[in-house]
Image (tube, rainbow, N blue to C red):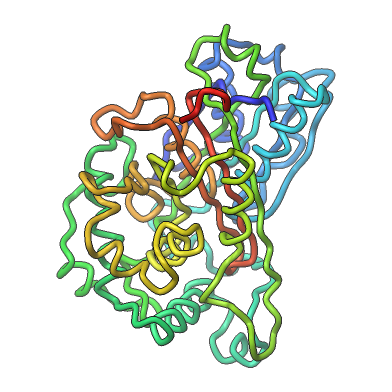
Length: 388
């Protein structure tokens, strides 16, 4: 793999009303292309992803006025899509299927005057996993399904609600340093514990935000990247994991995720180990997913993710900076583009007040469905031969 991210575009994000998902998508691509020092005429590949509204598709090509594309596709692995798009784009530019590929996600589920929960009410949902009896009893709400997963982790390993709360508190501390973050007011563990239940054992502050907006990255060959406007962020490793949990006794649902396979493959391709990772940007639709992904990636033993976070390792000043922009819990929610955009900023050294001093190896996760899909990316400001 010899590809690099050379452009990054993020629109206004959060409670931004009056704009459609395709509008956000087009805006994000234009910003990313300009950021790279390129023009739309340079783009010959476009990969698109849409959230709950499913309003962004390959017709974005015409909205942008792109001509003679060599690569065009709409991709869907839910929260794992950003990593999957990046893998497809990196392979395409490495093997000559395209020269400059834009990857974009956008969504606009929020409406003025409505709660964030209303953004998902009544929308068509994807198929959920787990035993059919549990699905029937628990209902189709994703939060309820994740609550089942979190409860199983708690009962198996002794993970506590306070440890999940430590994830939210640590990420709010990072968000306070991020001018793009929606939630920047300091958060205490007591406030987390006092927030209302959404689906026990998940409190309101265990759950991610709902945001309107879009984000895009531009990918090209590493040799071309050196001559463009921004410092290149090299793609060192890629991996995916899709466990396909059986609806029967013996399922690992809630205990082990696709991160175990995906992370090992990405680290192996990059030629690094967990001890080499300087910054970790995890998909955090819920606090629980941070805990289980830390374990599955091997940053701590299985069952010790809760104590690891409670000890302060992931917070500012900790041994392993995690979700340095506040993540989806306190920053903004753009599916897998949330951790990817922050990873690019950290790898470039452009994260401002929250910039981590050591950022030679940045690892990114994406989680889709109800722990059904996982993607992992390892990035660096250096080409592979210069890392470590």
